[in-house]
Length: 203
Length: 203
Image (cartoon, rainbow over all chains, first blue to last red; front, side, top):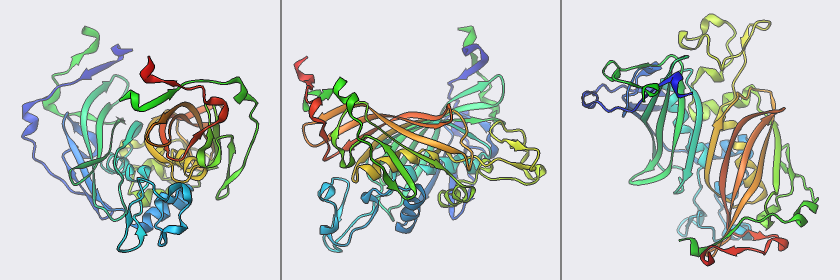
């Protein structure tokens, strides 16, 4: 099993010098970082990040599309309208000045920042797995940053690379969502400096 | 840490008798199963499932909303239009008769079936974590079933229940997406037959 691929867990100081920055437009959301477009020249510690605020309209559109009727994703103008089950819900932040509750962005909607990064930078990348820990609420109109960092690279004998990335949604200093993802980059190649791989079969 | 909650891992034969079935409409997508609405009477092995086919228009709307430009989620009418990186992509199923590729449903879109089940049955349920393994492609217009089964229940001293569910998206006999989720049901209560809990501090 392990013999069919070369494992790479290696951090080159050369890589820290890399300062190439690109801005690939994802709609109006530019991506920052140094993960190479199309995955040609992948290396450990490369990252990519994108900022976005989800509007109440976008949260509503997502809820309609996916049939998620959870009232946490709605704004209520009169507290008494709320179902009794959730009137004092921890995740429901009530604004006494506006007499409205804050709209919670669906965790699955916020987490799409990860796939939008991969799908834009590396067209054809195949998403193999994603773990998501929803730690803090993300509210509508709140600017958050989605960030992926390459933690591990496996070179596949058959084709391409599988990268394991840490994935984070951050608001200010707070981590709202954290986890990791495995992404298969079929036409991905390693950065030249990282050819110092080791073969797992040799161990 | 453990002392603050009571762990429950207990399967009652009585529960197998439960045959109450409800059909709560999620838009036009009825939910089947026996997880109780509002989480009043939660027990192990309860399940809920929903069928859905995602249309090409819904996949496109999702892609626009989340800025996922991955060409796998588009249908191409002429093969030469495809970027060279993905012309022979394993996930891109080419239909020679129609000269179009099949549209792959975003894994994150298909996975929203889980949240739509919880959000509809148990308004105010808080999604704590989700693991997703994307094993087989889900194509547009393909009828799939999203299914959650309660595998574990933790009773919180502070408030409510945390349930661990296995989560699956199934197409025919094939599991397309599998994983598990932790969901916090703040006003959830246990089914009467399952009060035989044990206190983790007593061990």
